[in-house]
Amino acid sequence: MKLSMRAKWRPLGFAALALLTALVIWIAARNARNATLDVPAARASEELTLASEGMPEYEITAAFDPSASTLSCTQTVKWTNDTGELLDKIVLRAYANAFASDETSPAASFELYDLCYGKAGFNPGGIDITSVMLNGAPADWSYADDARTIMYITAPPQTPGVSIRLSLEYTITIPQCAYRFGFSDGIYAIGNAFPILAIFRDGEWREDKYGEYGDPFVHECANWRVALTLPRGWQAAATGARTYGDPLIFEARAARDFALVISNRFSTARATVGGTSVTAYAASSGQARALVQAGARALEIYNEAFGEYPWPTYDLAAVSLPFGGMEYPCLSMISPQTDSIQLGRAVAHETAHQWFYSLAGSDAVEEPWLDESLCSFAALLYINKAEGSASLETYLSTVIEPSFQLTIPRGITIGSPLWAFAGWGEYRVLLYERGCGMLWGLSEAIGEQKLLEALRLYIDNASFGFASRQDFLYAIYQATGSDWEGYLIDYLDTYIEGSW
Ligand SMILES: [Zn+2]
Image (cartoon, rainbow, N blue to C red; front, side, top):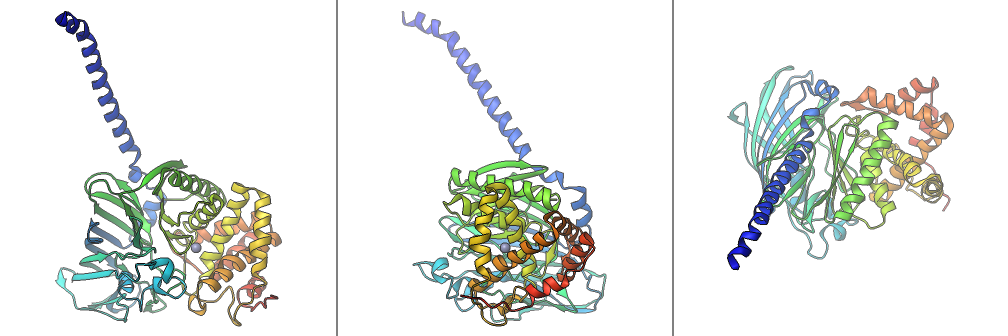
């Protein structure tokens, strides 16, 4: 009886085994397909390939240790002296060191301290550089500032056109801090942490201070290849297209910087916009979905308004920040929020930086309005299309118009350089709100289509390079045939008295 029962069930057993085998094969095939879908590296556009020729090359290996909050790294930088000048030193920026002390940390300002460090109080981070080699030989080097963010590497006279190779070994310590460089709630944000060439402009290396507000980072586009080793179960959002494996490989052509966000708590959500794979990383699947929806919508709107996004990937990562978000090439860090309207607007602003900062570079220290006000204007296009015209009207009448009535310290204008502002409050009102109003007014005066035509020309003229106020003015002239310098002077250089 028992035997016969077994005999009776045997065919079913075989069928179940066959089904199980088929399931295993199907899952393996599906994973293989996913792996292929997840590797858009090979699709770097012809535009990117052409633009990236001759750019500096960064190659990094990084091993992440969550128990120590460190990244152990090796790095090579290949650079050709394209300054046209004879140089006796090369300057790298080691921004991470600003976080070593509460005297120099940009997150330790009066306005931000509690938001960033919270009840636990100050926690140091930084970068410990143990080896610097120049063309294969140990190099003389030193820090040039108290915050140890400026590295002078002494070099034999570097004639124009000569190429050098720097090799570094270092450990980055990530501080406990809700900031663009720091960890909070199990999410590690690693922004402006890898050593990067300072920019050489107007006959000298720029040595801008890593201050407490704005984004004082002005860098040339470069080609990056980063091999990242993560413990099992950890994931990374990053600049650049990835190839799965151990290590994970990220490659980014023509990118001004490289940033990472690492966590073992990420849910992900994906979308495709044109030739770009959009991926969101967040602590919950709901947050990831909200991020990817807003990011994909913003990319669609800006692709149409400003021209196609040229990179194969765009990542969004939820990171606790004391501000709405932070832009990096092919990656936005977005502060999580439950209000979907506010989240969408933060994503819209940061995504616009992929055109105004990442693609068309500008001087975020001397002319911060040029990327910030243009991104806030771009967000109006998003509000209009994603939320509707009534929402745009409300935003203009409740946020933008009142900003012109606030009292601002005498002498501060939309066109002021970064160091003229006293803090985040002024910076936001002038650049995000009044600057946006200035561009809205221009759009009303010349017509939205003409302004968008001008912005496409502005981006085309400065793609992978830098634009200035004069370039912006010239693009308006190209689009309209008329000179709008007087209008810009009225807003950028003229003190506007508030009435409140
Ligand atoms: Zn911005």
